[in-house]
Length: 285
Image (cartoon, rainbow, N blue to C red; front, side):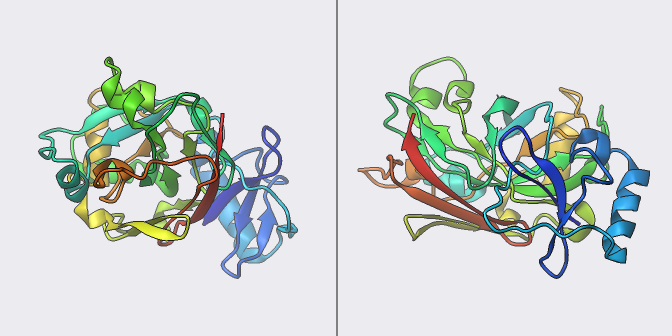
């Protein structure tokens, strides 16, 4: 299934994108697409039956805003330097263990919402990433297979980053990761049954129509199942939590000088096969 949330900011309602491309209203069946839904197999089954039966009301998609496909997110966990190509382009050794950082849930916006370049920023960067949404509580998992079994589905993420704040200002990476609007998510949450192998997905990103990132999740240093297993040793992952699993080569930080960091007026588009496409215009905060 392709689950999503549509409507004005703060008033999104749950919806489903049918196999024929028709947008259908789920608000008569569920209150939201969130951890409570993703952890309840019986309710998910009712949603599948309703979708298959064609009984869900049709929504007019014209002019309808798409929000984040997951509501009430508890935490967003980022994985840094998780592609061999990205590590190579910035001259870093592949990490021996996953690099972790946190993004506040209030940085999450819809896939086509405006992204704000922070005041004083000179190094705002793009990062197309595979997002993993947790479907059942994960604690002290023992294998990558167990990790995959705890995944509810996948989504597309732009892990927008301010590199000066992140790297040059001391402290933690979090300063460059948590500016407002820095986590566009969606358009859909695609349930895990539709993505049987998350390590074979093409990842692409364009800036002002120019292809910048053209990678594949097969280049990940730590694959999805291992990332979930590893994180579960250090924190409890709850249904609705989101893991942002790293970006392939092609970010601004990895380009020759002068590096093409984002400026107000730039348009970023990104896609992962099966997971849809995003488009953001960048404006000054």
